[in-house]
Length: 629
Image 1 (spheres, helix red, strand yellow):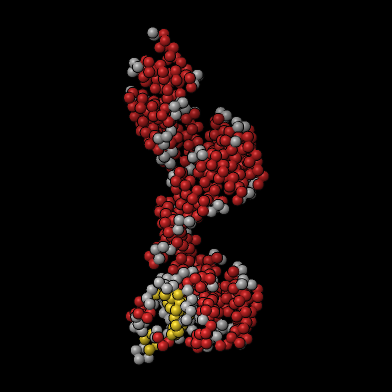
Image 2 (spheres, helix red, strand yellow):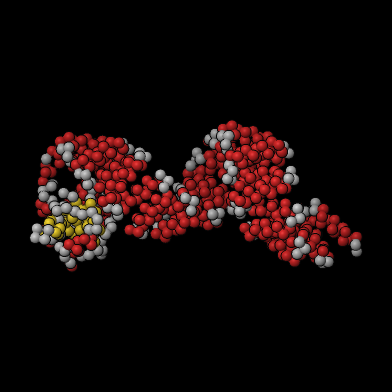
């Protein structure tokens, strides 16, 4: 005898369920058998279980029917809150959906106890409808089973197993006892024993969906994905619309990195339940894994519309924005996350890095300190804190970095930060020692070779620098920064043709690399190819219009092209962004002098010299103007 819940918005007194077509509207997939018990949950407006039916076959018409004479109307119907308070939703069923669903033994036992506790005067009548299922309460097996179930509910698994073992020894065909034993073994991570118990349930009742489902989940935890999928496929062959099993099958495909297949399954779930958050979260996770960050962001936004307090989704939403270099928006998402969950280490850590890149150093420091408070042994957070302190508390940076190294002396990222710290202090010997230590620990760590190459380049050791930079490219050829390092080296060596090729490779990998665009423009300018130089410079300005130096370079190119009005506009734009930018004042003065606007030019040169007394160009121009009077 199976137990079912039929969820409907209809009020049963208003229409007959004795018509087969009416029943089919509600029972779309799994079908009860004659003799099964069907409980009716009216989801709206009452939200309660009011009737218990025994399903019978009408011999005259050979149809399954729910008849009034085969039902009990409960005097005190259990409400949704009663079920919630009785831990009903902590068993297999997590929510009610319209239609019919089979109750597993755990769910039925909880529900049976709730119904009887609210309707003590009807217990005998209920037992009669259940074919005296509970009349055997005084038997030895039933006593052991009840004790085992009680211990199970209180989490006393050893005692529960002791009693359930007695049940299965006395009655090896008791599926409920085997099922609960499986749940206990699953909870204590003895998964092979759990699978064995679920197999015994299936030997007794091959149609027990819950046992097959749990067995599949155990296989998944054991990373036996094929065996897990086999279990789920058997269930889905019988009921392709079983949402919990569809979700688990989708999770399995994600584990196998079959992201397209996984998304297809989650889409099926969302067609059945458009607001299923598990399906939406998993779909977004697949989209991220496929590198489709804009699509993933749209999915996270759907989730946040449904559940604005989902802190993890705010965190992942921020990570998709970060991938698209939308730093301000990413920071806002991370801030929403930590506001909802002030224990979210990853969000504080990511927020600190974003704020650092936005040059909001005070807030970045606060974020890293929060991360360290949550994870005191996080060497990475300690390292990031030292990076921020170098900007605003340089006297404390070394101490923070030393603490991080003490926590994890072999941490490559921490050591790499230490090398950069020594480089910033012009202590190239210590920086190179640390980098050589990193390379000894992990020879294929490309950033160490790149930084070593840059240090050697600054020290004029071009041959050794070139060797390190080439190692960096060989290890990580898809990283534009490795190519950028060698491009810089070749430029310093005045090998402009080769340098342009390497800057070209940088732009092939990262078309928005402003530094590569600007240096390409500079080299083309040196070669006298001003029209081409202008194209690269304009692209750089479009990408980062807040960079005053870019406007200055573009102004110089316009000056070389004798497009002085446009040159002045660029210098003015640079000065609007940074009024104390001496080069822009000097260059503006040069253009005005050529236009015979000597008074204005003189003001510009004086402004440049005030900001930079070593500006020989402005000083020479002013002296020449004085002589020519």
